[in-house]
Length: 163
Image (cartoon, rainbow, N blue to C red; front, side, top):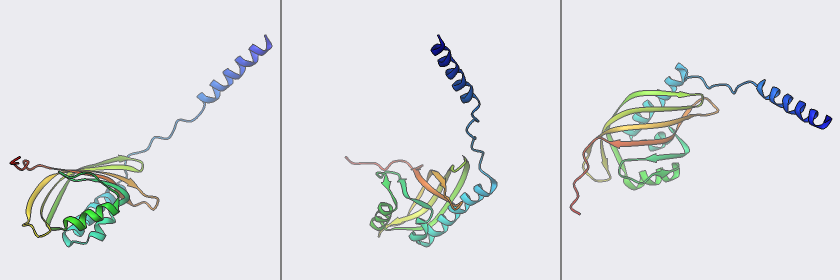
């Protein structure tokens, strides 16, 4: 009988102690400074792409970032991205982005928007491209923001295929 009472007391105390635990803090919305920093990352990216400064472009992305470009397999990591850039040799003559939304909580954020650009791959003639994009960003220990996942989709009709 005493053993059963002890068990009941231990269970009651355990339940009471668990109910007194503070709730996990909820991550607050992004600050104005975070939103400005994220906009700055994209502004710098646009400037670097038009200048053809792919080293500067790379500073917008985490080392293990995932790149999902239209009509291409996903590219995992900056080293693979750099190999991809070296292979396709992009030349961006003009790039405009329109940010529709920046939101997030704590150290995670997303950026949603659209783009239009004039780009050539290697020796090919420049093409007009337009589409939409989504970036997932993570705040770093130093307070900066880096893109961890980027996906873009073309708004242009698919090319006709003879096969």
